Length: 138
Picture 1 (cartoon, rainbow, N blue to C red):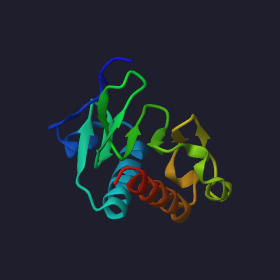
Picture 2: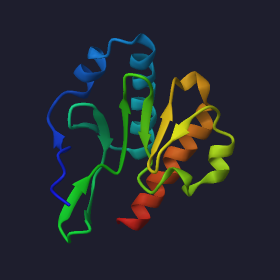
Picture 3: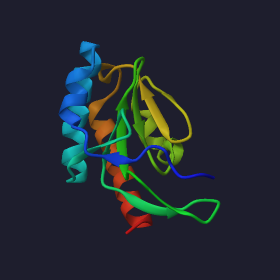
């Protein structure tokens, strides 16, 4: 495995969100920015060109190289919002059951718009993943 191409940088999170063309995606990004900031207690940073991350952790990849990644993150994509649940989307099935409409990959929870999900459950899911990350990577 090679070095990660997506790295933390000094680009402005606010400028990135302001640049979003889709009004719902922009509004949802502002809401998630507030949720993640409150849950994590961390300041947001840009990771690459489109990921908004909070905190970081270091891990050893399969090639025994140390790499750093965001502890919690989301990305306003063209067709949906991606929320990165670092320990896996299926880690908390009881929360997913009450979340609402979404699709997912291994570590990405994809939501068309926040109006499609229960925000209390979403915030609990983000908080659970943050807590589990902090336990696994103190």
